[in-house]
Image 1 (cartoon, rainbow, N blue to C red):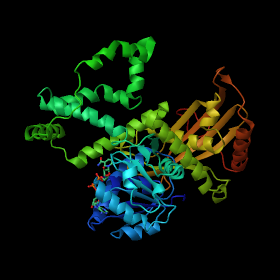
Image 2 (cartoon, rainbow, N blue to C red):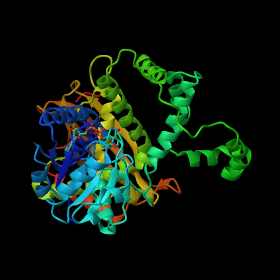
Image 3 (cartoon, helix red, strand yellow):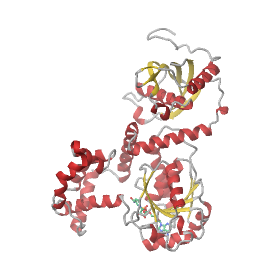
Image 4 (cartoon, protein in one colour):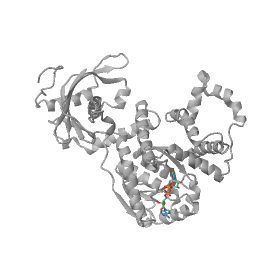
Length: 492
Ligand SMILES: NC(=O)c1ccc[n+]([C@@H]2O[C@H](COP(=O)([O-])OP(=O)(O)OC[C@H]3O[C@@H](n4cnc5c(N)ncnc54)[C@H](O)[C@@H]3O)[C@@H](O)[C@H]2O)c1
């Protein structure tokens, strides 16, 4: 199957828009096709809305953004793309007809994926040309922030198509979950619907409001679910004996009528309660406002999970490792003058970095310097694999001077000069500049290379040392920064 450079979208509503935002952000061109010409304006708006949150997801270097084109000619789109993601309404006959038509125009090595929430792939591939390339790739809203995509094959689907889809989805930062057997509703919607059915019953029976039921999740189980699923959580709930004790203790309750399997009738009264309840919860906030709030916390949660290398945070880490690797290949060192300080980080000042004076708050200067150090370490091979061997440079001293203010949305970049290096020590000097070249801060740092098991200084790997030494030698002709070696209050 092909390497995906251009993604074709069939249907550009909520889900098509989400796919477009994610793919473009990670450098994939998109040809979006919809029967309604007015959807062009809609999808461009959806992409613009997604961008602020997506831009904050990672500081890893991104490739240039992809470009978007829009067409109402589905077949012309199919002839030009490397992968097609179908996102038209959830109606089986419509999907079958459109997929069959598109399959006659897409080259046979183009995977065709459906975003269907519950239709089985064997039904979708029925009338297609080359049905072995049809898979279900079921995403979750917002597609541009949630990494999960359920991957399901039908009776005629080839392993090669599933593998190609998995590669593509991983490339754009997703977590493909292979569903072993096709079943209506795949996996996640089966679970979500079971919960929703109970909600509908509890509202219908007048037991609780929509707001109370949401509280019952967000202050408790919801917090756990981001890092561990129900099964792992219940294993912990069983104490030392784990799941076995949990089943012995709560197993009998499964026979009690705690939950109901059949959904209640959607009467007018129930619909009113659900709608009135959720609009009371919105408290006057528009869908767009609530979406922004949701996007902001989804980004923040993934960044926290990254620290623990768990769930969606592990996916984010893997994506970043790939982005750093690709950036290395893109920016061949020949492009920079090795005699000048390295320019390793460039970023806008984010809104959450601003303090009550409207300036970038002091510890964020250190964070940006830390990002530069991370980038330098990666460049010389001190990365996750290196640290997994129980060794790493530890910061033992940092001296920051603040020279100029940085305000929200200012662009800044950091340069790094290697002042000294030996097997156990590394001395760096960083300068933070505003995009216009104004010096905003300097930071001098000393690192000691440590063996984590003994907690003692130890020599770094010879390859890393050789690379750092080469950078130091190239920087030897630079003047020593006047701030280097300064103590607090000492005049320059
Ligand atoms: N909304 C969700 O949360 C969600 C989540 C995961 C998967 N899905 C699935 O994604 C698919 C799309 O859902 P959505 O919420 O984006 O729907 P939507 O109604 O927002 O968008 C559907 C789009 O398809 C277009 N369309 C209709 N007929 C078409 C045709 N013949 N050819 C091309 N375009 C056509 C419509 O103009 C519209 O823009 C469904 O299969 C749904 O089950 C939805």
